[in-house]
Length: 464
Picture 1 (cartoon, rainbow, N blue to C red):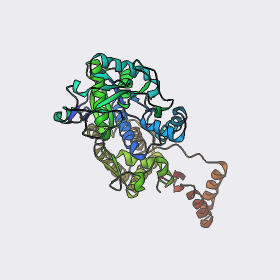
Picture 2 (picture 1 turned 45 degrees about the horizontal axis):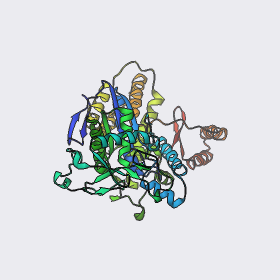
Picture 3 (picture 1 turned 180 degrees about the horizontal axis):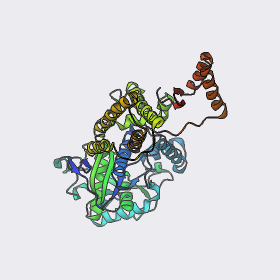
Picture 4 (picture 1 turned 90 degrees about the vertical axis):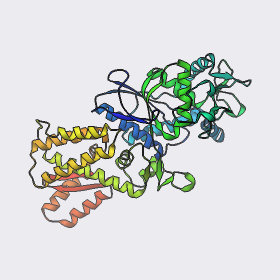
């Protein structure tokens, strides 16, 4: 019942087997910190989080590296427009990225290497490529990778070999799809770069975008590691170029399995500022959607399918999270000491379908079918405290992956605590008007007071 994943390189679902026993070495492409990350970026980061959590749930030890691009064409251009240095521009967006990751409950990587802190590693890698005749130096002091020197170029993206016969140089960090070109490993300094530049054997300049991932992934994970993740938009040219650089420099294999997730759409349209459908995490939080709602929404479409963001879909996600939380509260009110694993078969069924290329839809179906049956026992008061305790333990195990059910307790100030006590007294004395006034006061603070046989349960609202 081992994990199977769709390997983009082979276009097949393959059984996953770590290179090094029980340890998984994982690399994923991180943000370019010239602006705030948008919600589409977090579709990819949530997918990687799901993968990591399933690996850990299955008993693997995961070493995850996510690069941070803090120098490229867009960053330099924005520094010029705002007349500030890179060291003044990028930290604010890096801090915002870390905060957004925390808000969405995404586990941090073990390493977040910055490109500007690994220039020496990139220069050494470029020197190897020049020495192996995979790269050439221009008169201006730039270094380009010669794609005709690498016979396997195009195998990841399935670029036609016929299109590789003639190539041009491209110095920008990105180029058009289906347009193979010799790409820049090192860019000679030019006046518009301002004070951005480092000394190298070829003169002052800076690295190209593609070389950073090869240099940093191999530094932290070795020349050959288990999994490389990213969005489908990175498959070509970025990941194709990574393979050429890395294999060209070492002569060894580079990555065992390549995983790519599909795009996020907004109302079935590509997200664009000009269309007014461009959202950062902060934008959606300000519209009243809770972080758990956004995480659940991004989590619950299979990673190889496009995901369509609409407010209706977000409302549906909020309802699903509320259903999960209501079930957890019912169990918590009844749960006693657990002595067995009556529901082990549910976890086995969940893991069985999740192991089929992270089939999250089938996994959620297992969870909600189980909850539906458990709620019938709860409704009929036929669930023992021991079984409720066992169910609660299993639900917490599922939340090791979902991370939307069990929230941190709501901390109330003294005034609010006193109001809840006052409302309980008001209800006992049938002073319904005062009880309703207090309930409305908490609703305005996005908190619901739920009356149960064991007293008032305080819940944070997650619906808009």
